[in-house]
Image (cartoon, rainbow over the protein chains, first blue to last red):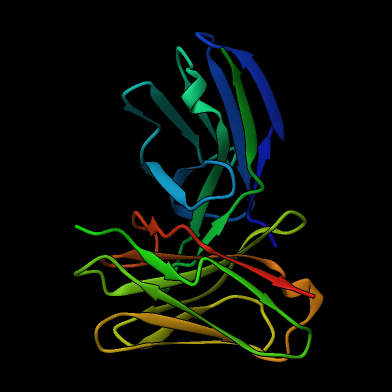
Length: 112
Length: 113
């Protein structure tokens, strides 16, 4: 079963616009990560945010985490055609050896 | 450093057969995790190996098994293949495993007919 649910499932924007996708999860976590996947290939790690952090930046990426609402958002600013991909959040459940669970993904299309 | 490699990249098998997939992690990484990705179920965690020991296991039947060798290379095996096993199988390596940044291979696309 999926721990995270991404919203929206699909998003289409014009190049230069900002893209925001959300992830909600069910159980307490230690960390939340965002990954990108291009066209059925392997995933690429984008950013990790710990449960005691509220916001993190990496280049054009901004991630927020609200543990009280069990949700996270990924903002991509000034999007480019190369950002077209599926984006997944991944959480690890607190306690014991963590098992990473991926969400359902948001498919982003950036139109040139 | 070379990335995570998976072999073969594509595979076609018949229902009832068995299959073995291979994953070579990034040099120095001791953790290897396996995931199954399908359009219907998304990314599902199969298992994680760390220093030759299975440390975590997902909710898959016993037909799915794996192992890790002393050089950290890992194999997963699926016996008695079913049509529903058709998927992209992804391997990921990391230094410590668990919640830390994982580096994914390109995947093995398995088709069961």
